Length: 466
Ligand SMILES: Nc1ncnc2c1ncn2[C@@H]1O[C@H](COP(=O)(O)OP(=O)(O)OP(=O)(O)O)[C@@H](O)[C@H]1O
Ligand SMILES: [Mg+2]
Image 1 (cartoon, rainbow, N blue to C red):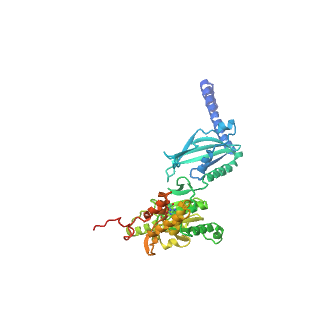
Image 2 (spheres, helix red, strand yellow):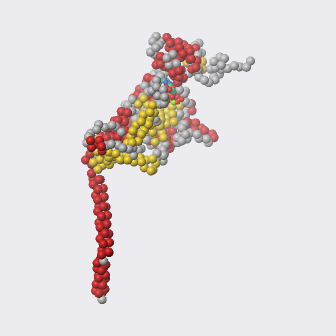
Image 3 (cartoon, helix red, strand yellow):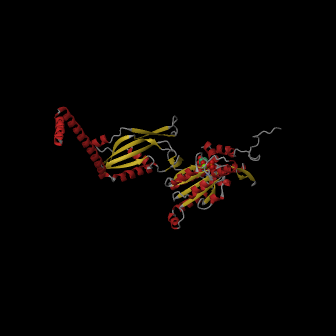
């Protein structure tokens, strides 16, 4: 009975297979399955071969090397041959435009430079004997802080050529360093990142900042000494840091000096304005953990943190949100990197707290004050030195400033209660570029524009009712 049933079912199946329509269907289906299988196998083995034969380097836009590699890719290359030149043509370009100030003597719109870079997509470049496939991709996710879309660059080459990446990166770095040669990069905080503020600026010569006798030299010597003593600090277990506080009235050259010093040391400047909106303790501490290498940290308006503390005490208002303790923590750098040279500037040294000025936070304090006779003379020489050969113009200028009582005392030696700033002197000289006499005649303009107990107002400037 059971054998019968089995044979019957077998019979049925056989009958089914005998059915030409059904058999064809099965044949097709199995062919399809085999093809799919083969395809999967091919993809898998291709993937395996790819993994074995190729190397892939991924650089994200956040990485400092990203712009260097893009610039390197845009480098013109000597044409190696017919095939290579066809293969390595870049068909997708993106443009970066920089505008420069006008060239002297040429009127019209500012100059523009267009800098072409490989656009999104795949490109092939040849480096030495190796071909590198480059894929630049924009993702549809974005950096939460800056809102910029994430971007990556993938470079792929043969496994046997993997060592060329070292050369590619060092070449790209060399190019980037060369482009910044003689320039000072100023970084500022954007969101949680340090970004270069505009294009790198031409280094400001240290000699162009005129400070009172010996001030500049003492800071420069101190910083240079510090930079040579890393091992000394390490041996004694002291954090390798040094802090400077420059204080004084506006326009005395504090910021300019730090910028020039960075140029002298071949450092960049990483600048944070403590009174800036949106600068919080957390953000400050975080930014200091990722300070760009070889940079002077510049914390402008250090008093903001103190104003903030006081205002919060009295009326709960907090405009700037960096607090006193936030600033101290940032300077102590519990979380911050080891090596650091920090400069703090303020116009209101009286608002600072002694806790800030203890060694380790601020090791050197300098007042960069009102223009002195020494500075006025030096600045004169910088502007008119080539025409005022016998220094008679300089003498007349200094005598005029004395008459105006602009060096803190009148010609009779009595305190004049009046000073001027180096920025104002620079302004006067800029206004009278080739005109010494004009500069002397207009020296009265150096009197600070504020009302000081009667004597700052030139006679006749205010008419009092009779
Ligand atoms: N001692 C100086 N030597 C040369 N230039 C100076 C000097 N002081 C000021 N200047 C010029 O004046 C301008 C303002 O200077 P700077 O920004 O350095 O002043 P500051 O002390 O940082 O002022 P603030 O306290 O307002 O920030 C710059 O263009 C700078 O070139
Ligand atoms: Mg300044």
